[in-house]
Image (cartoon, rainbow, N blue to C red; front, side, top):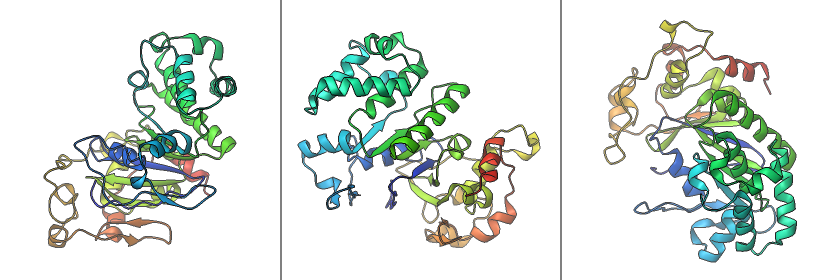
Length: 321
């Protein structure tokens, strides 16, 4: 990531979207100060707890990080099978987590069973099962329940539905919306699938080449995307309401992380790029008081790059806040 700055508001669902390799997973790990070597995290990650003074996650010691990562913020990875120990039952994972954080095991396991039931799973069956004995959707829901076991205030989900079929994807996003409403959990939902997150998120943050290029309320961005990349993403999404001629892939490839071009990182793929884009990285421009885009051509992009919304995105527009 390159000089990323992002505010995440308590009780909101922030959707982070972009192509594979755009830096979304790195952003998720940075929120927990969990960047894997040889990556290095610099700067600040300021967390505001419900009670108490704000603190910089980057300055926590190992014991403080251990508590922070499960008790304040939890991360759900995209491959549930890779997150579980195949030699340990699901119940064993729950017990191990509770003991590692000095929680009452009996009370914690009872709460874990409640969570599994809320996610439409049979607690008895799931707790005694090994990961390979569960379907992909069941594994992912069990992982979500495990991440909520210590009642964190923030849940970060890195492509949590990527390996699932469309029906299960919709089912899990509906369950997440229910959990968000019931527990008031702040959520960061990271995905390459913009329509999937469209009816879940309050705000969207679009990432390209390791930096954010457009941020705003979900409704505003779907209706009035201002960055050429966001508009190209929306134009490339397959849907039944537009002809094949109206849809087109984004030409070219995203830049290599060690060879990001000077100026605007999207300029080599952008039909609106000019000399200014090649010499200076564009700052954010205010589209509205809550919607901003890092592009010199944010006004003309809305006229030059047309797109047709999918049925899911249309539903979000009909539910205008």
